[in-house]
Length: 432
Image (tube, rainbow, N blue to C red; front, side):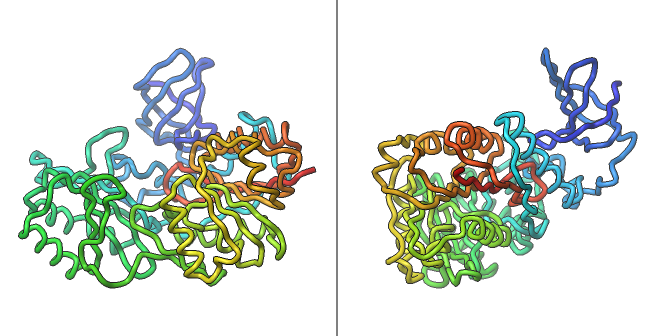
């Protein structure tokens, strides 16, 4: 059985070693370790393998906190201590910028991180009736599988939500539509925890009674989703606190629906927003764009500084919510929102929005390639780019630097998803 010394981690938190000129990606191995492994997928230029034995462990190796680690697909880095996770993600970010974009930042920012456990305020849990495993299962999928992991707790969920996994099994298993409820979406706000039940058949009166009793016992709010996301409605209790999260540094409260996009990690999001505002340095009298603005996570803090902000988002529903949040926070006079598909941005569509002194870009994983290509000679003098994919950040950064004349002043990682390989980051570009 082959052995190897692990050089680094890839973007999926697999160890990288070499064997006779071929790259081997070793699951479960950490940098600096000597491991024994067995390949389960062989390609002409690389192999993918499992660790069978750690011959020389890394000093950063720790015992995974969750008993489901290795089976549940929610985590890939629990065996690496938290500070080393952040360092590994920083290396992934820098590697992508250089190898994919051929650029280097002038400065590496201090990483943004927060609590390593109990941070996940949004989650999509699967529910499945599996008689062979004792009945109803509620949890994340198993690694690289469509099967639902047999979970009884999750260390990444807030403790009170983790404690609901077993009671939810019992609730759904007791419903008449136990085999027609495939998903539970969790959304945790500052004042309320919401559970969205995806139902493929209507609840009967007995089902409704069970759901109401569960809500009363566990202090949660149930929503029902009979069809697509637009069909979601609050079921019980109908009255009471709404979902929201606060940004205390800016005296802002964002209200949201349980199926609308918000950052999963509230603590890290507060620090991320603060860092973004520091880098953007908005001033009164400036006109600033917030591209892919969502419900206004960055828009309203920018507006609070006195700048005028134009938020652009592809979802009309999110734009409507953003407008409501601007009004609720008494910032409607400093903000305007528009609906546009920024994945199809052109120089003409961007110039039609008028001149911007500065710009914040916070795209999904696909990045913002058409948007950055559309920036012309009269583009913003400063751009803050918040990324959830280092590969597309590297691609877009290369365009800004080599084709649009910007300098990559600095970048750093944002550990929004501890214990996973997911790499978020923030970067500052300035016109030369």
